[in-house]
Length: 139
Image (cartoon, rainbow, N blue to C red):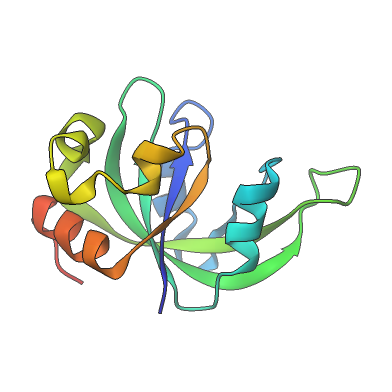
């Protein structure tokens, strides 16, 4: 199993929107960056991800699971980009802010910090476990 972080502007697609989709999940569409698209191409069914509210909140608020691998993104008229489908698994007990992440020495190599403009980034197994502890959440 691999781990990921999915960033979304809550005014466009929020954690509550994701929860409302239930087990059917929702396609993570609209990604137009090749590196983020390559990250999604590497995903497998069952991979887990943090759901991160970007812009004003800048915090991890939930956990999702990949339920459909990379496939066509109907919002891309060019046909160059695809998407994965994810479903909400659970809300975190305590949201983990970007400031909290930046304050941890062991997270300085986290792609969220190093590649802050990417909407989909990998999370190492150690980073995943550490952030789950910060979020006071188990899975």
